[in-house]
Length: 294
Image 1 (cartoon, rainbow, N blue to C red):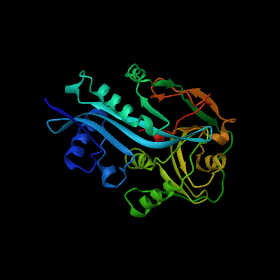
Image 2: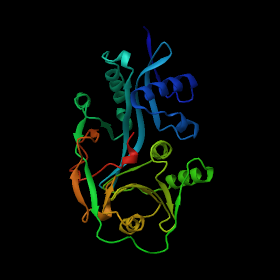
Image 3: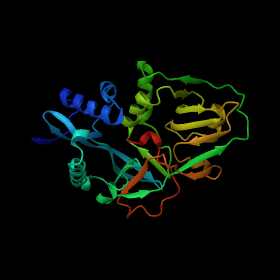
Image 4: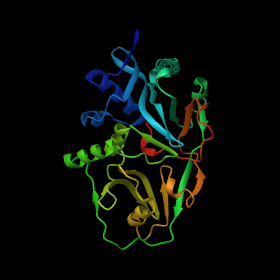
């Protein structure tokens, strides 16, 4: 069977449809709504192997910038690494990984990716090193503030809400200077459409988009989108409920690091891999923003 390599085919309907079929089969993810919203931009590029006009293996790259120790690093995140079950064991992912690393080697400061724990032996073969991430929690000892507070729920199907999200993403500050991400608007939009569409709010008090949800007495804070620094402790006090006892930050909460307690990521969490590590120095305890995972 003849195989060809194809890349950046998002505007080719037949290849995009085949890519979506494979991603639904392997990950249960459909990229079509993201594409139709115009959010699949030129910073997310697929590299695929095609046989009989079908995508049978893929490695994608997402271009973005990492903010580490307050310094910006141009980065490529590798994601959507997948092979059709009928074509596994042929070295197709290896072939694509080697190709992607070679052609982008001189275009960025570093590569990174997130791997589930079934494939932890795969990525070190390409020069990647696993790095430990941590979870940040805050114990709450105060009740929610009883003050005027307007929180508008955002609906991604409403054009004015979607426009607000796009506008605020363009000028946002990185969520952390310890370990933050910029220029990843498309990824946030993917999460907004497919994962956290029920968790999006606009706070007029903070002039910020807040992504959060309550799980019993635990508040999950996923992201805060604003062009200015937001008082994180005040924001948390406004969005907590009477039963809330703890907050988990799914990013590195710079302002609250001295108040938060820290735990290593659990065994169910994906593992961060990075290449190279030579110029990063000693990394602080950190959590890569969840909504920056490709």
